[in-house]
Amino acid sequence: MLLTKKSEYALLSLISIARSENLKNVDILSRELNIPKSFLAKIMQNLAKNDIVKSQRGVNGGFVLNKPYDELTILEITIAAEEKMPSVFECSPSIQSCPSDVGNCCTIWPLLNNLQNKINIFLEDLTLKDIAS
Image (cartoon, rainbow, N blue to C red):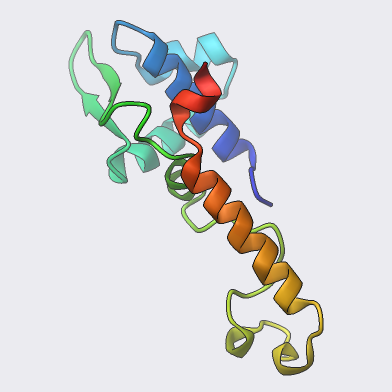
């Protein structure tokens, strides 16, 4: 599940905004990136709600990054777009909250948890600038 279309579209939109000297609204981004407008509008709303972008209203309104793109991590963008912490597996972050109630005897949970932690660290260290260059 790690990166769904929501994350992909959020990243593509933010790269486009970061590279532009002008504000970009949902109509422009939708056409430019060939993303369904209503789906993109919801993603941009989540990004604005999580202070990743600022929305400016008006005839020439649109979106602008809320902070420099070298400070926006892929993890925070993904969390905002997906509206939850991304996970590679359907595994719980703790043995006690295992959805299948077999956490105490699961032999692969330590491996999966370790892998998820490494991915989270990687995504936290990777910025929008890193992928936009």
